Each structure stands twice: as C-alpha cells, then as structure tokens.
Length: 358
Image (cartoon, rainbow, N blue to C red; front, side, top):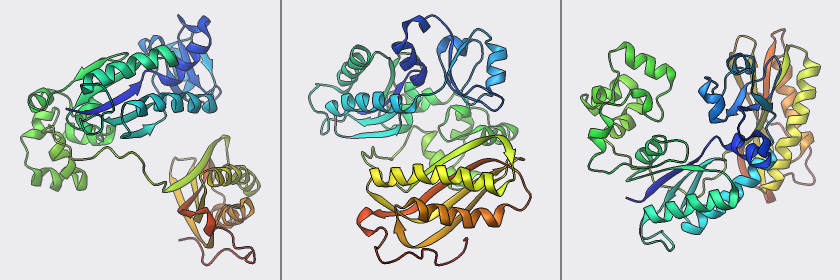
C-alpha cells in the first residue's frame, strides 16, 4: 500500500486561528457576511452547532450566534498551501493537488524519497505540517485513490487511517452509499428510493446492472464498491480553462451592470493567463438566473489571446444576446481552448471573432 490522501483540517479556519490565537477557543466561520453570503468553511467548534460549508450565512449564524465571521483571504491560503505542498514534495515527486487543502500522494517504493515505509513518510509529513505550518492534517493510506480518500475522512481532525486491500470489500459493505466519492445528494436519493442504501447493496449488483442504471459512472461505481480503483496519481494536469466569477448582491438584468462586472472578471482572467504563460482561444460566459438556471455561452476567437480588451469585447457580445429582460444572480467569464502564450495576439491582427456564440 502506498497511495495516500492528505486533507488539511478546516483549512481556512485553521490558518486564521493560527494567525490569531484569541480565536483558538471560539467558533469561527470563514465566509462572506450579508444577505447572500455563504459559509466557505467552519472550524470544528462551529460544526458542532451544525454549521457546514456552502450553508447560507444567515442560517449558520442562527445555529451558532456566537461565531466569529471572517472573510476569506485567498492570497494567504494559497501561500500556506504552497508551503504545505513543498513538504509533500520532499517525500515524493508524485503529488496530485486536488484543491488548496488536499492532495493525493504516491508513496510506493519506487517514488518514495527516503522513509522506509509509506506510513512512516506520512507520519513525518503530518508532524512537519503541524510543526512548521501550524495546522493539522488528516491522512488516509491505502492501495488506491478511492480507498485513501475514504480513509482520510474516518478520523478527522488530525486522523491517520489505513484501509488494507484484503479487508476493503468487507469494510465497505455496511457503509452508506453516500460515502462513495462521486455519489452526490441527488444520486444518493435516487439510490435510496430504489432500496439501495449501503455499499453492500451495490456489491450485490453486476457491473452491467450498475452501468445500465447509472450510465458511465456505473462502470466506475462497479469498481469502487469492491475497493478497486485504477486511477493513477497524476502530478501535473494540463490547465483546461481559466475563469473568474462573482455573485451579485442583488439580482440584476441591467446590461450595463453585466458588462461592467464582466470587465473586472476579464482582468482577473487575463492576469491568470499571463502568469501561467497561456493564451485562451475561446471566451466562455456563465450566467445563473434568478431561478438558479445556469447558462453557458462560448465565442471562439480568431487567435488565442491574453488581452483584456479582446476578452471584454467577446464577453460583451455574448452578454448582449442574453440580456433580454431576465435577471441574473451570478456571472462568470472564462478562457478555454488554452495554448502557449507565444501564440497569443499577433501584433498586426485586431479582429478577433470568427463566429457567434456556439
């Protein structure tokens, strides 16, 4: 066994408590306050009261009125994440980040740098993160990514759990189907309405039955429920898109508001493209209506770009087609069809659109 999943415990809240010791014994919620604010994360003291990520802030404060609320400081969290990742990389070059606060590591013999066993390497990592970074992590170790992630969730916070390959099927059997990574609330409700409540219920079905019922995911499900997962730890994934989005304080149908907000988002996207030395060949507009419908529109460019004005012009043309009286609660702008920066913005070409929204 040498595949690990490491998850920082209540990452944003833990970093804030590290930086302000007066918060140590107080319930802390990180997120934006206000009518539309939601919980980004909550410390474990707040979670005891029922506060959860993505919960509306007003509801969280009803459950935990004594909580301290802080806005997220993403720049700080990214710096801390990079420092933690450096510790991971000291143990193995095979690190696959999932988000700022979690990653998979391949600590099999051929990739482990020094420790005699994967378990010892992980113990050393956890100790270093606590000593050098000032927060705790929960660790799962197993034979594959699916089992490792499940193991890391068993004893949070500051847990270290191992699921052996031989015991995996029996260990999984009594667990709720909701424990399976990839089974969201809607899929879980569908399963439960069919009488499928435990992983044992899924183990009793053939791969063909699962695929017929759950489509492509059914094929992967058939492996997961028996403790099998052939996904490799992939150290670097090519960036497929770069985007930025924001939620309006009040729903708006104003073309001017939409275009003005899109302009700021285009600046963020352009900065990311430049920093990552990439260029976008397609501009993507995302809108969420007041009734929570998500609309996605695309415009392909004549040439890849890093330029703000090109992104703004494309986004504006897409907005004009959608600003038809409906009101929107969220807008996002992205760049897709990414390529190397040296292909961006030929100096003698200013026209950019080759066709309309796809």
